[in-house]
Each structure stands twice: as C-alpha cells, then as structure tokens.
Image 1 (cartoon, rainbow, N blue to C red):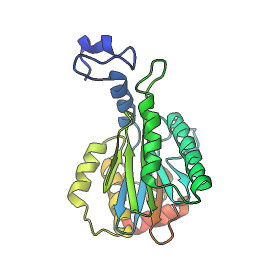
Image 2 (image 1 turned 45 degrees about the vertical axis):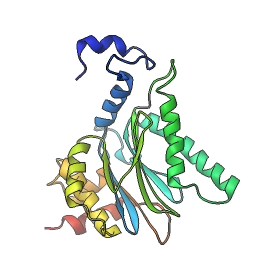
Image 3 (image 1 turned 60 degrees about the vertical axis):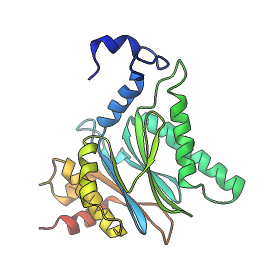
Image 4 (image 1 turned 90 degrees about the vertical axis):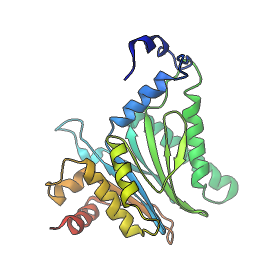
Length: 246
C-alpha cells in the first residue's frame, strides 16, 4: 500500500510527500480500519448506533469493554480504532458539552460538538512532536435540527450521514446500507438495518443470541425524549432473539 520510495516522507507528521500525502494520517486511518465495526443509522424519529466488541484475550472480561459511550444526555458516540485515543477525545467532548450548558443554558448542537472534536484531531496533523489520533468516532444525537449522525476522521475531517460504518469492513457495510436504506425509515427499522449491517460483516451468523449479545452494544435516541440510551445486555439479548429468530 505504501511504496518504498515514499518511506522517507513518513517520519514526521509535518512532511508532505511529493504527491501531497501525509502518511502518518494514512497510518492512523489504517488503525481505524483494523478496529471492530461500528455502525449508525439515522431515522426520521431518531438515531441508532450498534458496535461490535472483541476481547483482546480469552481471559479478559468483555463486559469491561465499552464500544458506545455517552457524551451528554442527547448525544452518544461509537468507537473504531485506538480506545485510549477515543477516551481522550470523548472526555474533551464531555467537557465542551457542559461548558455549552453553563454558558448558554442549552444543550450543545451535534454539529458544534463534532467541529470541536475535529479541531483537536486536525491540530494533531499540523504540528511536530505529536501524532494523529488513531480513532474514528460515530457521533449520534438529536438537537433542534432533528436527528444527527456524523463520522470523524483521523485527519480532522467530518461528514454527516444517513447511515454509516467505521472500522473493519466498513466499506462493505456502507455499500449494503446504500442498497437498503430508505429516507422514510423509522427507529425500529433503523435498528433492524443496523443489526443486519453488523451481522453482514460478522462471522457469527450461527451464534446464539445470548452469546452474540455479549459482543454487541446498542445505543439509541428518539426525537420525543431526546435522551440517548445505551441498552443493557439483557435488552440487547431480547432484541436479538426477536430479530434473529428462525
């Protein structure tokens, strides 16, 4: 992927290759592509996030791994890439959300939160002595503009999506969403589509719902409550039993 003659240009983040590429950013993107899959689907009345968890070791407690986290009451995020980098960015996002509440007495808009995260990411592509954040985030929530779904890139770029995927085999899942997604989809349909997208990438088609529930996290928010909820393991198991029943 990275030709030999380009290797002299990947020693520092501030050095462009003759083709105008920043190889350290591309390496950070590779870290994201090797991370477990996370998907998000926006509906007319909310947003759903589904993330796949993978244990680093058979003796590790998979319940201690978090794929979907809360930023503020009305916004949550799913991770693909380096969790340590994600923790730093999410902590910053939580502080920014609270600053907005204290300063303006209202929840921060999803787009403003995403811009703040990506400003930090971009800064780490511009100065010597730092490296890019090797993580992408799916940011989902509801604000005055309705349901919102964004992805953030290691380069500091961001995009709004109707349905998105980050992590391993994300390109395949995005193509699947492009075929199946409908603008009129509701929250239940978005949940079905998100689970189907994760299962399309997964090799766990024959796994029992109770076992599969231990490796999946689901978060959702609707336009009525505007509260982002991360489902419990039991709730995820019930959903999988209902949707994967023969």
